Amino acid sequence: MSKTVIYQSERIYGFLINFYPERYRVEFAEEMKFVFSELLQDAYAEQGDKGIINLWFWTMIDTCKSLVVQHIENQKGNKFMNKYNDFLMSNKIFLWGALGTVLLLMIPFVGMLVSDSFQWGIMDFVFMGGLIFGAGAVFVFVARQMNNIFYRLAVGIAGVAGFLLVWINVAVGIIGDDEPANLMYFGVLAIAFLGAILARFKAAGMYRAMLATTAAHTIVAIIAFIFYPDANPGQFGILAINAFFILAWLSSGLLFRNASSSDTNVNA
Image (cartoon, rainbow, N blue to C red; front, side):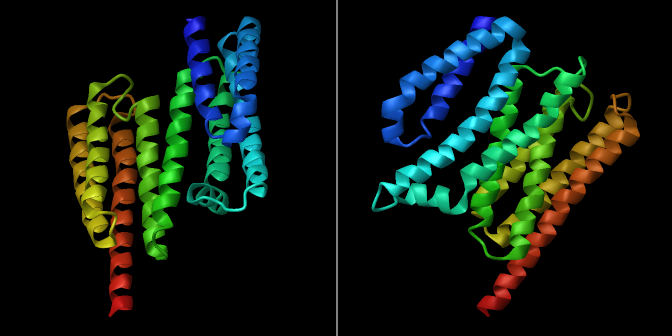
């Protein structure tokens, strides 16, 4: 097991190095990989999985800081800034996204330190880190395509709802732990995603996509309430959790409708 965890960690760290400027990678990549590999071996030998998690925690903080510094230094040496780096540096997506991801992952990390009942493996942290960072990046990218405040709020609410829906179901499950019926909620997310693609992220189409998502989640909630009354949160818990998400999808849809109306009035 230790060899698998260390091997996967080395691969992930090697992937992170690709975000450094090319000149920096050429000069330091191999040395960085070697040092990280040695640190992994030592961390696992001393503390096991907790040692690797602790190492990853500080490595992510140092890597985020180092990436920002190296990209800034790289731009000082370049006369022209390419479009990709301009996007990253001007909007600070990578910096804030990475720092926000680390801060959110501190919650389960601290939980592991203070309680033996809260156990996450290295791949749990990697999965949730990717999910948090990806959700944040998508929100910033989509929201910045529109100057309409209603559109941005709608994207934010839908993004948070989708993120929490995945987090809860991966962690414990709305309809009890290890219950296959929880897969129905991923069907709800699929409807939201496909609806957004079909709408091409236009406000009017997103309004209809959120209404379809609201209807789908309502159907799932009714099924869960009727057919899984003995699930861990109980019928009241199932009702309350699902009501939160249904209201979130509906609120997002109404905000998209307002965004569409605002755009129509401006164009008129």
